[in-house]
Image (cartoon, rainbow, N blue to C red; front, side, top):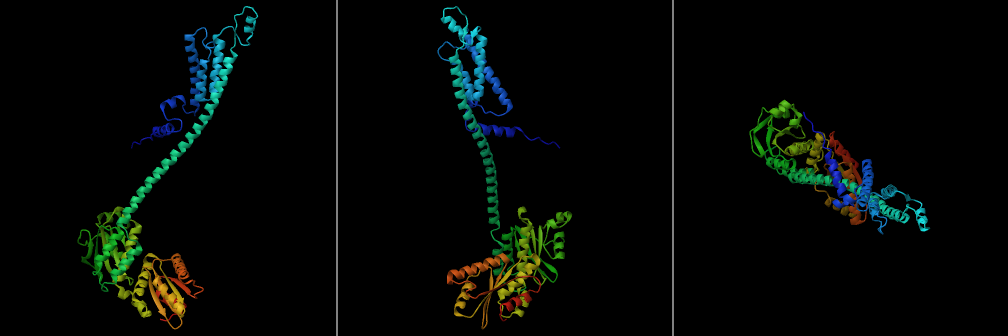
Length: 485
């Protein structure tokens, strides 16, 4: 396979563009007059340009004035324009070097010159002399102006280099921020699409399912199945799915509810057979590749209630590829278990209602569901008990707490001769959620009545729902609260 070598010209091209956009490099004339400095090659080119430019200027002047190629007798040192430009372009060192070339040119082009200036003195005394004195003022003034301009050039070359380095850094940072902003925009668009396709959270979905199952007949999966499937498809992005009743070890071939194009149940599908045998969710990634290739289903979810009795079977034929994730499938399993418990709510709540006849039906039903949820998915829930006394002020606080419950919480108020107790069942809430709930209640009491738990003599008890002997654990909580049945 042919592999293509990375293009090394792209980084160089970006670097050149950044340099062309840096301070002091805004036009082609600026790049010609004051090019950037840097590498050793650039320094060699600077030396060559200094030598060539100075000698070229001397040669041009010599062509027009062979007897005075440095133009020392014209009244103005025009030849010093070259060292001054070089000093502005490359700095004071390059300008001084160009001036030294001019000084060497004077010795080379003015034979018989007298560097000491004695020839002029002898000529003044009347003695014949052919020696030309060294024009000290010419060279001294030229070097002074060259060094002054070179100092100016050094300062601004340094500033331009610093500005160019800062500009390169800011360009890199801008490139990184641009890429991050682009990725953030894509992520935001993806999040919007997910929220449009799946606007419901787990709490919202369970609250919706609670209303569905409480309005249907016990042990009947067909009534309310369409509403459940619509809620599940909205929460888990199901495009085509069907729900079948499962009674007496047999799945009925006629769908109780369907989303998308309805189709007949394929009893010989390998994914379906594995789901029926295992009694748990099975999807295409959990089976062998050969079997998954032969299956027309993406996922099969048996609906099993808290008593381990089969209620129905949900088969998913089509869903978005990005929705086929572990979290989404676990979400679907939680919804199916919750609905299955609701279908069998008469059987599920029997043990709790027999142990606690005064327990509200909603509390017993959700308690049984959450026990089943913890056994299957280890998603924890909690029960918080607040114990008040029987005074008039405690009655007011008691009623206030009853009115401030969360939407998904279920409360069980108890009262005897000495205590008023509020049991709050908090689904999907761990220790942190319990602490936040107690803090919110205490802050609310302090804001409304100016009391906290200690001054109001409110006892606080809590327990985590577990799968081992849940009824005994609930009885132990009531005993700690000194509440009767």
